[in-house]
Amino acid sequence: MSYFRGVVVRSALLLLLVLLSGCSERETQLEVRFGISSAPLNLDPRFATDATSERINRLLYQPLVEFDEAARPVPAMARWERLTPNHYRFYLKVDRAPFINGRRPTADDVLTTYANVLNPATASPHRTTLERIVQLRLIDAETIDFHIKIADPLFPAYLTLGILPAELIKQDHDFSHSPQGSGPFKFADWPEEGNLALMRRRDHQLFRFLRVADPTVRLLKLMHGEIDMVQNDLPPELIGYLKQQPEIAVTQRNGINFSYLGLNLSDKATAKLKVRRAIAHAIDRQTIIRTLFNDGAVTANAMLPTQHWSGYRGNSPYRYDPAAARALLTEAGYGENNRLKLVYKSSSDPLRLRLATVLQHQLQAVGIDLEIRSYDWSTLFGDIKAGRFQLYSLAWVGIRTPDIFRYAFHSESLPPSGANRGRFIDHTADHLIESAETSETLQGQAQHYRSLQQYLLEQLPYIPLWYEHQTVASRRFIKGYRLAADGNYDGLTEVVLER
View 1 (tube, one colour):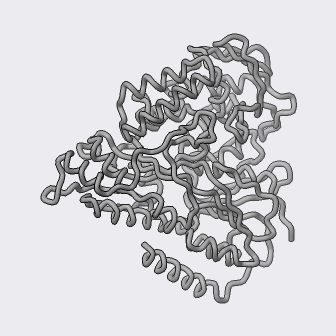
View 2 (cartoon, rainbow, N blue to C red):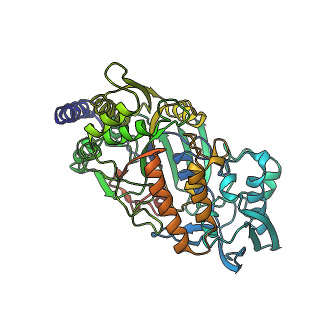
């Protein structure tokens, strides 16, 4: 691992020195150019599920509810009252921002947005999470009632969907390519995939999101002055080098985005619990974090971090133990004369490919032959949603509420109705999810969700890996950007340029 890391560092630095020779920064700056690793796939919040789309959509649309640093729901566009255990009333704020056509959002916009998502014909992947709503009722132009099936003290935390104009929903407007919201930014242009421009509404500052898939090239463009900001998906071995550059500012903080190894439980090999547990014991997470991520992550035992109000507090039973992995494989019917062969699907991002190579080496050491297949992001994500995989690794970003467990693990949440992409069908897990949702107190919910996370750790539909740090690197004239623990781009609302 040390030799491998040294080769990577020397090669990357050499490439930097060669390509940076003769570089000169652009003389004029009319827009802020934000380098991203993958382009947004859908700018309609009813359908967006990939991380980039959701981060961009937060800039374009306003939700009813937001979260504070402790993952507690707080008012965004509206405040609320709980009139009965099953009845919430929301009051739109007087000073709420208008849509880009100048009209302020009304309760009818809220009703139409949520009713549309709840309509099965819409086929929204967010419908499953919101099916607890049984009735929406307009009180007046600024007040709307939500009636829910079962008492839920956390219900407001699920109302984070961006609100769309009712008249455009009824006209079947193409929000995915022409977003129309009331967020702090508005759509400017999208001349080609991987080149999206948004304008900040308060001062007309233009921000252009440019897809640069290769992280080293993205870093070079930052150094060259061709882009002005990059966030995450950076070569860890080069972050230290960036910190030494006088024209570049680097900020890091602990993150909450959950990285995991996903497995297909409808596959005859990965459906075996002993195989999944063997893989978990075969992965040396601490060594990967130290050498591949330069200590830029912390190990994860569950989706929700310990500081979350319903986070898992226990330890993982899957310490790095190659001997235990080999024993489990033997019990599952595999050995030297019958080696387990698996296919691991990865993005073409170099860091993710290096991770895949390390996993391949560690699994091979216990008797698992891992074939790596890399794809562009849209192809990879399409295969994962369709269940065309045995193993893959991704991260859940921006997890604030435990409704993620229904969305990702409930038997009713198979795509396109949810994100149970590993086809985990388990009645015990379903019962724990439903028990948590029907608990009348947050303390009761937390207890059920912790029990669920313990059960998921036993059954391993996911193998928890780590929470990667959040990192932003920018040209020094970019000031005021607040780096979020979940990696969202909300800090762009406060960015100023100092020439």
